[in-house]
Image (cartoon, rainbow, N blue to C red; front, top):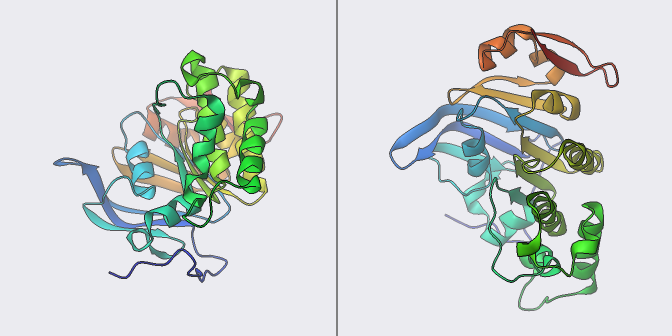
Length: 271
């Protein structure tokens, strides 16, 4: 198989999805979690994947990030098989925030965030002013500038999560994959972070997030993938797929769906 060089231009049409799954079968060891999956992540979208626990959301995200080898089928990145790209080129094109991350012992926040610049380093291109600016901007965007000199081990769970997000932002990848990014955050910081992702989306980045809060998903997403039992039940505009009937089918929750009084987006009200 011929690898795509880091400088090979990708020819895309306006409607080419940023990421695609084609007849995808994925799982762990001998267990298949999902099979025959067909999914598209529109370029420039804020896509949120929702569904009950253990329905395959995170597994699909790991496959999109090339961390999980499909048992069958393909993952396409910018219209090409993702395995054709060198590892560093994949990292320059997309970044992943996993559910749990472990920092090296004794590392300071600024040094951890700086690791997000690794995909941009080469033998001929070492640390630069652009790298320093990217780290400073990521710290500022996540409200962690004042933590830069502290050890990651000393931080609270919520602070650590914001630092990991800062490292992902420093990577400056046009596509960001976020697996439950609001974990450990109180409700105010959850919305601060989601507003940050929404702003990045408006600036042109493709955001793909797994969220448990269906109302947050409906408020911020412009594209939604709804899963249950390893299969995709529906995908599209939240306004069209978030209905009381579908919420009850997927989550087993009897509810009414009304318009959010502030945003007009679907708002789920349990009965």
